[in-house]
Length: 345
Image 1: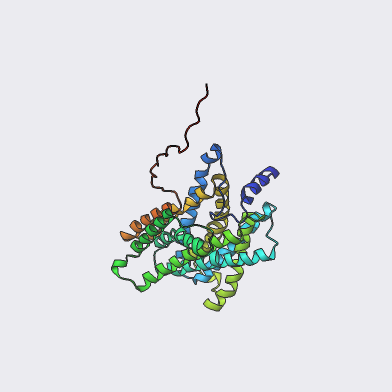
Image 2: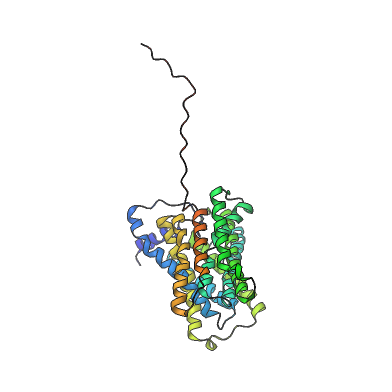
């Protein structure tokens, strides 16, 4: 890798310290950049959509805590290698590390583990659908808890549509209860964790001098430490790697290297090229890939109301985030109240 190439990657991945996960102001990409953004955008959606397949395979033989530990540990190692190649470094501010520990717990360790628990009970494609509800939780938290956003009529309508879609996905008319319902609640709980972590990050981490890549690596390192402490206490000693099936080991490694490490790098690149708002619309494609991959690889079949509810959820997300707007009636201008100045001869 040449020095010029390293410099270009540093410019790309250093943009937006603390401004990852859709919490940054948009850049203004030129037309050439817009023509090359689609492959990375679709690739990111495919990687994150496939992550639910890898989680499903991993929890067949591993406790969800150990699936998550293997995932974030491998992801942290991947990002540390990228940091070394780009000659970037981890944050040095101790207070920032404390804020990063909160983001690591609620934005990485806890939601990743909850998805693992959930997928012990529900299909991987359904977990992918629940992931799309994240923006519906982010907005109320940002409005009510962190006071970083304002609730408008459009956003309220979007939230109402989104939560109506949640009820359709749940199929509440069929009754509530059982392992499937518990699994869905766990996946929604994972989305709720993201809903806490994203506005927290926006308030306490965004706008720093450190690169987004360095902050992401720090979060994964902290999540690895947190899980390394909690997992043995909750799940006991892990099985030896030689006792695991090859597909389980491969799935956990793929989750870390691709679904976490590489995905973070691609996401930062997408934000640099097309701006945070457009990059965040990857949310709409992730359930599509999760459903397709679950159906093709695991022969999963959704019930009719799950994809219908997912569409309603995505519609609500689109409205609440301003991607769909209703027409505004133009108000005719009132005539001037001041008499015109007389024209002198």
